[in-house]
Length: 335
Image (tube, rainbow, N blue to C red; front, side, top):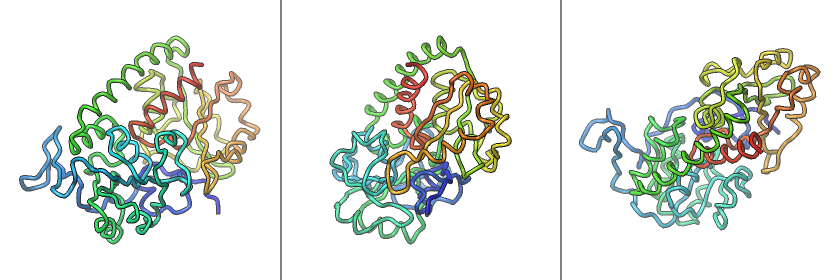
């Protein structure tokens, strides 16, 4: 059965949301499991506690792994940037990878990772590292993974953090790949600076709102600290419309089409698209329900032709989704 919900976090997605295909919308929930390989927080006791700006590497984690499995798309992103060799990765459809990263994952095995990891499929790949940054599995799910290979997870400071640069640097310190991380950050920031100048010339600080379907007649407006909003504001200098909530806790998931006038001050409206269940192909039905509302043509952004669609895969935070959001902005806002 198709779901029109939208998941805001890797933690919530991997906590057991079967069949959502990256398209659910729940508040961030669940607590991280304690897993071997997680980076201890500065408040943890003992000599192994990480200090601010540094990472402690558990003894069982390989510094130079040769066969890595990524349990979610953003986990794969960190591995790709740091040059950790992937043999298997989360797949939206269990057969294909999200389009923004598919060309980078040629030869990598698509994996089923939720609601229950396919342990036999993972074990058959003979990994020497399982990269599960979200740390969201229950203890009885973690144990079989640990029996397969050492398991890396971020400390809670970095789980679902909107700061991909800090999270990338944390993983880079653990796996002795600081140079790769800094090279990526520098290249991203240089490109963002160039695009920011073009954005200022084209849009002059225009306001925008990112919205997405929930079910027929109902939509949501994405919170300020999801990846697309952060990219457009912090990297490119656009401003948020008044309807944009500051946090996921303040976000409503019950906005009816009759309330579309809340988007009247948005110069640009961005509409999320999701894949059809079991595929990576865009499900246009939910988007057409929004744009088919009789109130839709009355919005100033619609009248000005300033409506853009964006893949839901770019909602989540990682270095490669940040890069893909810059790609999207250049193609959709600056072409």
